[in-house]
Each structure stands twice: as structure tokens, then as C-alpha cells.
Length: 556
Ligand SMILES: *[C@@H]1O[C@H](CO)[C@@H](O)[C@H](O)[C@H]1NC(C)=O
Ligand SMILES: *[C@@H]1O[C@H](CO)[C@@H](O)[C@H](O)[C@H]1NC(C)=O
Ligand SMILES: *[C@@H]1O[C@H](CO)[C@@H](O)[C@H](O)[C@H]1NC(C)=O
Ligand SMILES: *[C@@H]1O[C@H](CO)[C@@H](O)[C@H](O)[C@H]1NC(C)=O
Ligand SMILES: *[C@@H]1O[C@H](CO)[C@@H](O)[C@H](O)[C@H]1NC(C)=O
Image (tube, rainbow, N blue to C red; front, side, top):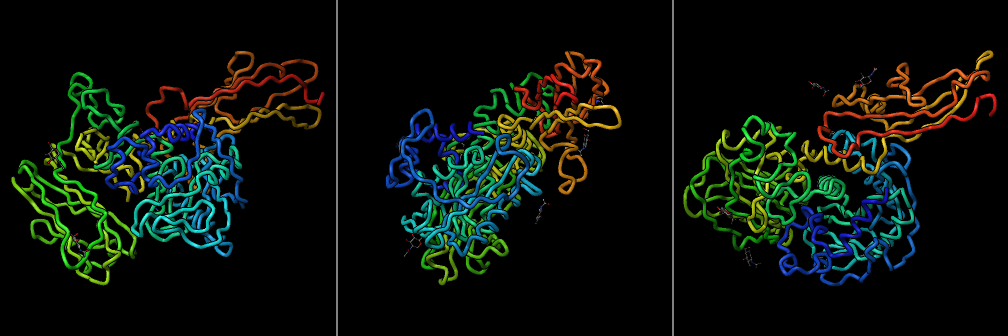
């Protein structure tokens, strides 16, 4: 499965803006380069990246030797040539830390696929760990990489993006694995938040944030969708429409189908909300002075949420958060330590017409130098009739970009592309995920011929190997079919349907030398169904295979 990588390389090589859409949460910072129109990737690296020119055909001109890789399976569902293969590459793990690397990688793979996020599509995926020892442990800081294979580093000491200094080495490593590497993931040995999307997904081994960044970035790169959170600048793919009057790509998921509200889409329901304030300060807090921001409200809404993200603040007594002088009783995520986390404080009642002030006051001087305010936002909503806030409601929810331009997303907060702390995708993204994966994975792994012999008769056997979905899923992982998954299978011989073999993955035909009934052209048609796919315009859930039986068992 090479297609996706080539596509990513193309976007990257051409300096296409879309690659910045993959930066995800780590990149929620004002990025001046997006305004100047420079290549984001270069600007983000402060121009310090070694240049590594890509040809437009996706080949790259800098050759580098792949580091030695010790490759182990983490969760393997089938042959690499018919699976989407995700590979964790080690950075900042010394030879003594090899076991830690495989443990970290396995934990991340399981977290995003064992019982949530990519669980239902897991039979289409393989996860591998590829270890290369680093001379030094950990990742670089202040823009200086350590002696590690891919040179991961942070720009300052703050928790935000983690960059790579040696993409050519990462390329060579992934290329050396051929079909076994479709989505390379550079895993940095660092306990705290950080990451980057794009051609390489960069994450850290942070217990709380590693899986969170990983599934969000993979959402971008595998489903090929933009953000759903506010304040970004890339909103595209199956989960975004720019205009409430244009056709809605998730029509077939809407809780109130357009047909019940008259003409299609011309009056699609839009949930009522507004974003009076949104900012990414990425600022270190101090006890000398509060950080605060003023913003106006209209007095026309009924509820609001104060949304912010912080790092370096492990205790509730470390910080006071106030809106118009009223303490919001912020409590840190349990077990977080100094890592970053996102907080939502929902409040009933509208904000009055006029100016308001949100402030963050560091109370514990010992946290100076680490306590950081990453982002802050205020959203206001209509009442429940005007804005359905409950999970599972599919509609058009306004999303506000960094320039306060409105686009629309399918659910309020059901999707990890919006709420990075949520483990699951919404149904629209999940359907997009299936369809994208099925572009690279054929439902039929193989069709093979064999013979059995008993007493005086031979039997010809045709065996169909399908991707283990529906009743073929691993019974240890789930013993009941999920989401009404099913495989419908039709066999034909010389154009005539073999009714007796309907839905069978293995068929047996008596093979007598004296007649030729076994010889001929066999065809098998497979159709996969799941409640998670409602629309399959390109026929990705169907597959077929032709097989000619030309010899008798006894001839072999
Ligand atoms: C998934 O499993 C992990 C541990 O294996 C558990 O903590 C988590 O709650 C489970 N999630 C769901 C949605 O069942
Ligand atoms: C965004 O636009 C809306 C509507 O014009 C306005 O009420 C709101 O204050 C704006 N928000 C920001 C952060 O500029
Ligand atoms: C303390 O924080 C305030 C608010 O963020 C900032 O304006 C000020 O420069 C900071 N002072 C120091 C000494 O860093
Ligand atoms: C299967 O489909 C039926 C009818 O659409 C639905 O009621 C039921 O919840 C589904 N079962 C599962 C396990 O998803
Ligand atoms: C084959 O399986 C499909 C899917 O479960 C089902 O709809 C169909 O009725 C089955 N066909 C036969 C002949 O049993």
C-alpha cells in the first residue's frame, strides 16, 4: 500500500498548505507563515532544516542509508501487501531502553485499536515496532537535537510541537521496509506532550498525551480530513462543509433527514453558537501578574463554555481561573503531572451584553518556568432547541477558524478531531476511515486451490481467505458480530450461480476423472456490510476474484 505515502510526499514536496492541516493540536499556535504564504514546513523549522528535494513524482533525491532496524510485530492482522501498515520508529531510546521502546509502542498501538478509535478497522491494519538504538536518551530541546536516528527536538522547553532534524533518515528507514511501512510514526522517548503531523507522524511516549496525539494525527493522515476544533485554518474532507447551503457530505447521517424539512439542503438545520474569544497564548505564567484577556459578548445566548489548555500545573492550588472575577474552580486532570491537558468548564446562562474578562493567575511560585497557558476560548450556545448539545446528534455545527470564518462539522463534541481528549471518531469520520482504508485493502486476501482424497474419490477445494471481519473476526477480541457486520459471498462457475455454496469461504467439488464438471472458470463475489458504512459510492465494500481450475486432482 504505497499510495498514501506518495500523496503525502507530493503535498509536502509541493509546499502545499494541506500538510499544515496535519499538524493538529501541537500546532495550535499562531503561525505567521500561514499568513505570509511561505511554506509552512520550512518556516516552522525556522529554515534550519537540511533541504531534501522531492521530485514531483514522489521520489526523493537525497539518498541516505537506513539505520539498522530491529522489527517486531505489535498487532498484525494479515499480509503487509494487503494491509495498511503503521510503523513506530524509535528515537531517543538507548540500547538499554529497547524493551521500553517496544512496550511504549505496543501500549500506543493497543490504546488506539484494542477497544476504541481504530478498533473496528483493526483487521485492516498492521502495527510494527522498528527499533534503532540512540546514543543519547530522550529528545532534544531549544532547537538542538540529540544523538538520535531521526533527531527529534522541541524548539524551546515548552510543551508544543516536536520536530525532526533528519527526515532523510526516516525516509530511508520506511523505504527499506517496502510494503510493510505505509504510515511511519516517529516515537520520541519523552514523557510529556508533543507531536507533529504530516508525512511523518511525530509523537512522544507521554502516557496521557501520546495516544491522544497519535489518533488525532492518524485521523488527519489516514482519513484525509482537516480539523474540527476552532482556531485552525484547515477544514476539509468528509467532516467539513464551508457553506450551509452546499450539499452536506454527511446527509445520510443527519439526525433530522433533510427530506423531512422540505427541499434538500436549502434549509439544512444549523446549530446556534458563536465564538466571542479564541486565543493561543502559549505563554509561561508568573505570580507577579495575571494573564488576562478582554472580549465582548452580545447577550443573545443561553449557555457558554470556557475552554482552555494548560501544562506544568499539577495541583488545583497552583492556579486560579476567573471569568469576570468569578472563580471557575478549575481542577487538574488526575495523574497528569506536568503534562498538558484540555479543560472545559460549562456554565448555564448567557454572557451579558458588553465586555468580559478571563484571567489566569499563577498562585504557586515554584511552578514559574513550567506553568504554561497554551490556549483559551469562549463559546456561547443557544438553548437545547437551538443547539442540540447531546452526543449522537448529527447536524451542522459551526466551527470557527483562526480568522473567525465559519465552516460546519457533523457533531457537537463526538469526534476526536475536535475534542482531542475524546477517544473516538464520529460516524462520519469512521465511515471515511473505512472507505479510505478499503482503497488500499482488498477484502479478498487470497483464493487457493487444493485437493483431498478419501476412499476412492478426490475432492477439489477452493478456499477463500478474507480480511477477518464480520464472523471471521478473532473470537478472542469479540465473540459477537459488531455493528451488524456481515460478508455476503456468491460463487459462480462458468457464469452460473452455485446456490449451494452461498456465503461459504471454502467450497468442495467432487473431482472424478471421467467427467470434467470440476474444470472451468470460477468467480467469487464478496460484499461486506457494516452499520458504520452507509454510503459507498466507489464500491469499496465489494470485491471479486476469478479463478480457472484447469487440472484434475489426480493429475497433480
Ligand atoms: C479500553 O481498555 C482500557 C484498558 O485496557 C481501559 O482503560 C478503557 O477504559 C477501555 N475503554 C473502553 C471504551 O472500553
Ligand atoms: C466572530 O464573529 C462573530 C460574529 O460576527 C462575533 O460575534 C464574535 O465576537 C467573533 N469572535 C471573534 C473571536 O472575533
Ligand atoms: C508575567 O506574566 C505577565 C502576564 O502573562 C507578563 O505580561 C509579564 O511579562 C510576565 N513577567 C515576567 C517577569 O515574565
Ligand atoms: C443491528 O441492526 C439493527 C437494525 O438496524 C439494530 O437495531 C441493532 O442495534 C444492530 N445491532 C448491533 C449489534 O449493532
Ligand atoms: C448470505 O449472507 C448475507 C449476509 O449475512 C445474507 O443477507 C444472505 O441472506 C445470505 N445468503 C444466503 C443464501 O444464506
